Image (cartoon, rainbow, N blue to C red; front, side, top):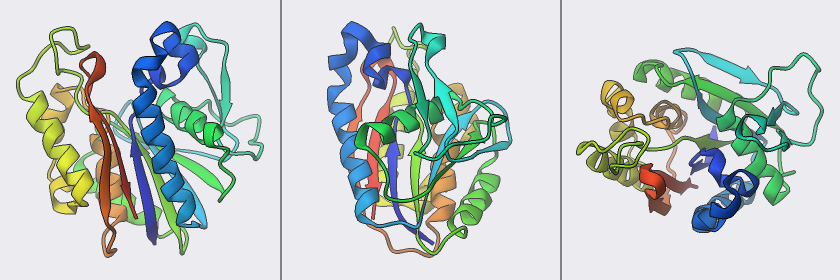
Length: 237
Protein backbone atom coordinates (compact mmCIF):
# COMPACT_ATOMS: atom_id res chain seq x y z
CA UNK A 1 0.00 0.00 0.00
CA UNK A 2 1.26 3.46 -0.83
CA UNK A 3 1.94 5.52 2.29
CA UNK A 4 3.91 8.44 0.83
CA UNK A 5 5.32 9.80 -2.40
CA UNK A 6 7.74 12.46 -3.51
CA UNK A 7 7.73 13.89 -7.02
CA UNK A 8 11.00 15.42 -8.23
CA UNK A 9 12.44 16.59 -11.56
CA UNK A 10 15.23 14.56 -13.11
CA UNK A 11 17.58 16.84 -15.07
CA UNK A 12 21.25 15.93 -14.58
CA UNK A 13 21.73 19.66 -13.97
CA UNK A 14 20.39 19.03 -10.46
CA UNK A 15 23.80 17.53 -9.75
CA UNK A 16 26.11 20.49 -8.99
CA UNK A 17 29.13 18.85 -10.58
CA UNK A 18 27.18 18.60 -13.85
CA UNK A 19 25.78 22.13 -13.64
CA UNK A 20 29.20 23.54 -12.73
CA UNK A 21 29.04 27.35 -12.66
CA UNK A 22 25.27 27.34 -13.13
CA UNK A 23 24.69 25.14 -10.06
CA UNK A 24 23.29 27.94 -7.83
CA UNK A 25 20.44 28.46 -10.29
CA UNK A 26 18.84 25.21 -9.12
CA UNK A 27 19.54 25.57 -5.40
CA UNK A 28 15.84 26.09 -4.66
CA UNK A 29 14.90 22.97 -6.60
CA UNK A 30 17.52 20.91 -4.75
CA UNK A 31 16.26 22.18 -1.39
CA UNK A 32 12.69 21.29 -2.33
CA UNK A 33 13.77 17.78 -3.34
CA UNK A 34 15.50 17.32 0.01
CA UNK A 35 12.34 18.46 1.80
CA UNK A 36 10.30 16.01 -0.26
CA UNK A 37 12.61 13.12 0.66
CA UNK A 38 12.21 13.97 4.34
CA UNK A 39 8.48 13.37 3.93
CA UNK A 40 9.24 9.87 2.61
CA UNK A 41 11.49 9.13 5.57
CA UNK A 42 8.86 10.35 8.02
CA UNK A 43 6.35 7.85 6.59
CA UNK A 44 8.61 4.96 7.70
CA UNK A 45 8.08 2.87 4.58
CA UNK A 46 8.97 -0.79 4.35
CA UNK A 47 10.14 -0.30 0.78
CA UNK A 48 11.07 2.66 -1.42
CA UNK A 49 10.47 2.33 -5.14
CA UNK A 50 12.04 4.92 -7.43
CA UNK A 51 10.11 5.44 -10.66
CA UNK A 52 11.69 7.34 -13.54
CA UNK A 53 11.29 7.79 -17.29
CA UNK A 54 13.26 5.77 -19.82
CA UNK A 55 13.09 5.51 -23.58
CA UNK A 56 10.52 3.21 -25.16
CA UNK A 57 7.15 1.81 -24.18
CA UNK A 58 8.04 -0.84 -21.59
CA UNK A 59 9.29 -1.09 -18.02
CA UNK A 60 12.73 -2.02 -16.73
CA UNK A 61 13.51 -3.05 -13.14
CA UNK A 62 16.74 -2.05 -11.39
CA UNK A 63 17.88 -3.61 -8.10
CA UNK A 64 19.14 -1.90 -5.01
CA UNK A 65 22.81 -1.10 -5.41
CA UNK A 66 22.51 -0.42 -9.13
CA UNK A 67 25.10 2.05 -10.31
CA UNK A 68 24.88 5.06 -12.57
CA UNK A 69 27.31 7.65 -13.89
CA UNK A 70 27.35 11.17 -15.27
CA UNK A 71 30.35 10.59 -17.51
CA UNK A 72 28.14 11.33 -20.51
CA UNK A 73 28.04 14.92 -19.28
CA UNK A 74 31.80 15.15 -18.90
CA UNK A 75 31.77 14.52 -15.14
CA UNK A 76 33.54 11.55 -13.58
CA UNK A 77 30.90 11.02 -10.91
CA UNK A 78 29.29 7.71 -10.06
CA UNK A 79 26.22 7.03 -7.91
CA UNK A 80 24.66 3.94 -6.35
CA UNK A 81 20.99 3.26 -5.65
CA UNK A 82 20.93 2.60 -1.94
CA UNK A 83 23.70 1.21 0.26
CA UNK A 84 23.50 -2.44 -0.77
CA UNK A 85 25.64 -3.94 -3.51
CA UNK A 86 24.09 -5.05 -6.79
CA UNK A 87 25.24 -7.92 -9.00
CA UNK A 88 28.00 -7.03 -11.43
CA UNK A 89 25.58 -7.91 -14.23
CA UNK A 90 23.09 -5.21 -13.23
CA UNK A 91 22.35 -2.69 -15.99
CA UNK A 92 23.63 0.86 -15.47
CA UNK A 93 21.01 3.26 -14.18
CA UNK A 94 19.50 5.58 -16.81
CA UNK A 95 19.95 9.26 -16.11
CA UNK A 96 16.54 9.77 -14.50
CA UNK A 97 17.30 7.06 -11.94
CA UNK A 98 20.92 8.17 -11.53
CA UNK A 99 19.64 11.61 -10.51
CA UNK A 100 17.33 9.91 -8.01
CA UNK A 101 20.26 7.91 -6.65
CA UNK A 102 22.23 11.14 -6.27
CA UNK A 103 19.34 12.74 -4.36
CA UNK A 104 19.12 9.74 -2.03
CA UNK A 105 22.88 9.75 -1.43
CA UNK A 106 22.71 13.47 -0.73
CA UNK A 107 20.28 12.96 2.17
CA UNK A 108 21.95 9.74 3.34
CA UNK A 109 18.87 7.58 2.71
CA UNK A 110 18.90 4.45 4.89
CA UNK A 111 15.28 4.33 5.97
CA UNK A 112 14.13 1.41 3.80
CA UNK A 113 15.33 -0.92 1.05
CA UNK A 114 15.35 0.73 -2.38
CA UNK A 115 14.55 -0.56 -5.84
CA UNK A 116 13.84 1.26 -9.08
CA UNK A 117 11.58 0.98 -12.08
CA UNK A 118 12.25 2.65 -15.40
CA UNK A 119 8.96 3.46 -17.14
CA UNK A 120 8.89 4.00 -20.88
CA UNK A 121 7.85 7.51 -21.83
CA UNK A 122 5.53 6.01 -24.45
CA UNK A 123 3.81 3.58 -22.06
CA UNK A 124 0.01 4.07 -22.46
CA UNK A 125 -1.82 5.61 -19.49
CA UNK A 126 -3.84 2.50 -18.68
CA UNK A 127 -0.66 0.43 -18.48
CA UNK A 128 0.96 3.06 -16.28
CA UNK A 129 -1.96 2.85 -13.88
CA UNK A 130 -1.81 -0.96 -13.77
CA UNK A 131 1.92 -0.78 -13.14
CA UNK A 132 1.30 1.59 -10.24
CA UNK A 133 -1.18 -0.80 -8.67
CA UNK A 134 1.36 -3.60 -8.90
CA UNK A 135 4.08 -1.45 -7.34
CA UNK A 136 1.84 -0.45 -4.42
CA UNK A 137 1.09 -4.11 -3.70
CA UNK A 138 4.77 -5.02 -3.17
CA UNK A 139 4.78 -4.14 0.53
CA UNK A 140 2.43 -3.15 3.32
CA UNK A 141 4.11 0.26 3.40
CA UNK A 142 5.44 1.45 0.04
CA UNK A 143 6.86 4.89 -0.66
CA UNK A 144 7.52 6.20 -4.16
CA UNK A 145 10.15 8.62 -5.39
CA UNK A 146 8.75 9.68 -8.75
CA UNK A 147 11.16 11.36 -11.14
CA UNK A 148 10.20 13.30 -14.25
CA UNK A 149 10.12 16.74 -15.85
CA UNK A 150 7.19 18.71 -17.17
CA UNK A 151 7.32 20.24 -20.67
CA UNK A 152 10.53 21.30 -22.37
CA UNK A 153 8.80 23.93 -24.50
CA UNK A 154 8.25 26.88 -22.19
CA UNK A 155 10.49 29.46 -23.88
CA UNK A 156 12.13 30.22 -27.21
CA UNK A 157 15.43 28.86 -25.88
CA UNK A 158 13.89 25.70 -24.42
CA UNK A 159 15.08 22.32 -25.78
CA UNK A 160 11.76 21.95 -27.62
CA UNK A 161 11.36 25.63 -28.54
CA UNK A 162 8.30 27.62 -27.44
CA UNK A 163 4.92 25.90 -27.60
CA UNK A 164 1.93 27.85 -26.30
CA UNK A 165 0.35 24.61 -25.04
CA UNK A 166 3.23 23.92 -22.67
CA UNK A 167 2.41 26.33 -19.84
CA UNK A 168 -1.25 25.20 -19.53
CA UNK A 169 -0.18 21.55 -19.56
CA UNK A 170 2.39 22.16 -16.84
CA UNK A 171 -0.07 24.17 -14.76
CA UNK A 172 -2.62 21.35 -14.83
CA UNK A 173 0.03 18.78 -13.95
CA UNK A 174 1.23 20.94 -11.05
CA UNK A 175 -2.32 21.43 -9.80
CA UNK A 176 -3.09 17.71 -10.01
CA UNK A 177 0.11 16.72 -8.22
CA UNK A 178 -0.46 19.25 -5.46
CA UNK A 179 -4.10 18.21 -5.04
CA UNK A 180 -3.61 14.41 -5.35
CA UNK A 181 -6.11 14.52 -8.22
CA UNK A 182 -5.81 10.96 -9.51
CA UNK A 183 -8.38 11.27 -12.33
CA UNK A 184 -6.65 14.40 -13.65
CA UNK A 185 -3.24 12.73 -13.62
CA UNK A 186 -4.61 9.66 -15.35
CA UNK A 187 -6.25 11.88 -17.98
CA UNK A 188 -3.03 13.65 -18.99
CA UNK A 189 -2.80 13.34 -22.77
CA UNK A 190 0.06 11.02 -23.67
CA UNK A 191 0.30 12.26 -27.25
CA UNK A 192 0.39 15.91 -26.22
CA UNK A 193 2.92 15.10 -23.51
CA UNK A 194 5.13 13.56 -26.16
CA UNK A 195 4.86 16.62 -28.39
CA UNK A 196 5.77 18.86 -25.46
CA UNK A 197 8.69 16.61 -24.43
CA UNK A 198 7.20 15.86 -21.01
CA UNK A 199 9.24 13.07 -19.43
CA UNK A 200 7.15 12.89 -16.26
CA UNK A 201 3.77 11.94 -17.73
CA UNK A 202 4.19 8.15 -17.47
CA UNK A 203 5.80 8.16 -13.98
CA UNK A 204 3.06 10.49 -12.70
CA UNK A 205 0.42 8.12 -14.03
CA UNK A 206 2.18 5.19 -12.32
CA UNK A 207 1.89 7.23 -9.13
CA UNK A 208 -1.82 7.75 -9.77
CA UNK A 209 -2.32 3.99 -10.05
CA UNK A 210 -0.31 3.32 -6.91
CA UNK A 211 -2.40 5.81 -4.93
CA UNK A 212 -5.78 4.28 -5.76
CA UNK A 213 -7.70 3.48 -2.59
CA UNK A 214 -5.56 5.70 -0.39
CA UNK A 215 -6.40 8.96 1.34
CA UNK A 216 -3.23 10.99 0.93
CA UNK A 217 -2.82 14.75 1.15
CA UNK A 218 -0.62 16.60 -1.33
CA UNK A 219 1.60 19.64 -1.29
CA UNK A 220 3.32 21.39 -4.20
CA UNK A 221 6.74 22.49 -2.95
CA UNK A 222 8.30 23.90 -6.10
CA UNK A 223 7.16 24.98 -9.56
CA UNK A 224 9.42 26.76 -12.04
CA UNK A 225 10.73 26.53 -15.59
CA UNK A 226 14.45 27.34 -15.63
CA UNK A 227 15.98 26.85 -19.04
CA UNK A 228 12.45 26.62 -20.47
CA UNK A 229 11.79 23.21 -18.86
CA UNK A 230 9.07 22.72 -16.26
CA UNK A 231 10.33 21.35 -12.94
CA UNK A 232 7.87 20.29 -10.23
CA UNK A 233 8.39 19.03 -6.68
CA UNK A 234 5.46 17.67 -4.72
CA UNK A 235 4.77 15.39 -1.77
CA UNK A 236 1.92 13.04 -0.91
CA UNK A 237 1.52 11.76 2.62
